[in-house]
Image (cartoon, rainbow, N blue to C red):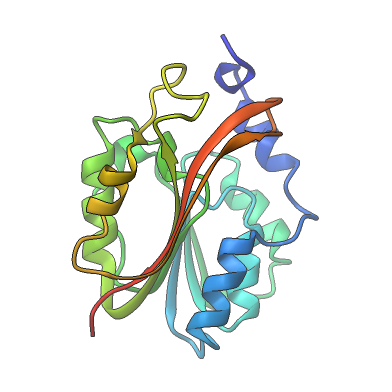
Length: 201
């Protein structure tokens, strides 16, 4: 059993997140998408809400979702509770996720790989359905060489499988990381696909 499987892992992980900068993939898609100007965003697997706060700060309305029950309190603490009119937060495990609101930007940072292979096709279908014409998509997906593969009930993809998920989208960035590095659970081998794409108009 790894630390990832321990009771309270995600609560501990999320509690440690406030104070860090928004992830580079989130900052990159915000730069490409321009000011939110009240447009709708979804932060899927929002954790403590660091990227939720970045989206709000850029002028987006945000629907933030996560499976951990501590999420609403943490997100509202991270965002300072100042953006309630533009923020909604929901606790929805991937096993129960069937739909997402129509959105102009969907961000999911290091979350989708933790959907089980049973749930991932349904979750990904919901992601694709949610994208309005011209909507932005920025996600991290895990590759088959990741050291978590085979140790958790998650979804790990070949490059070809990851690329196939993006059929019909305009792919602006598809970067592959396949190297050792640190993680919250300790050193590991990362195999990650960083994706930025856009729905056709």
